[in-house]
Amino acid sequence: MKNSQTITRKAFTMLELVFVIVVVGILSYFAASGFQRNTVVEAADQIVSHIRYTQHLAMQDNKFDAADATYYRERWQIRFTTDSTGNGNWVYWIMSDKDQDNALNDLTEYAKDPQNSTTLLSGDSSLANRDLSLDLTKKYGITLVTNNCALAGGRIFFDDLGRPYNDTTFPATAPHQNLITAICTIVITNGTQTRTIELSPETGYVRQY
Image (cartoon, rainbow, N blue to C red; front, top):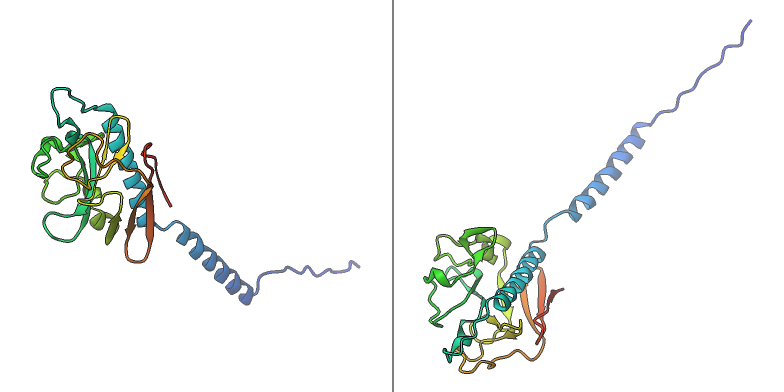
């Protein structure tokens, strides 16, 4: 007569299953939080990229003209300001303001998007073919831009050597007037988060933290 053997199978109890579900839920929450967009960092990344692009344009497009005593006023610049329509949005644009008239409707003075030549690198809502991502408030929720690199109208210029200038005197009256001589910062915030962009003198090196 054979001995019968009882096979015991182990399984999760209901309490153990609930515990596992809770743990997985908590881990999922923290994992998802890590992938959430940080719009202030994204805005800072874009600004840093466009500052470098402005410097690149200035170095490639040398404005020196021996026949023009005010050639330096045509240098490429990036400007941070509020939208011209008065909606309070913080915007910026890249341009070479040839006549220093600050006129936003001269479409020939704006830099163009390298990937789409019909789009102008301006976030101002007065332009039909603007780049919406340069409207920092609309795109990234930025509520304030504090720019001590540019002391008057929010402008930062670059010369053919890539050196940065501010707009303390605007328009400038000499080629090397307003040369930035100390580290300066651009601070952006959405009200709860802040990001600082740092611009170095001489080299125009830019970084964020």
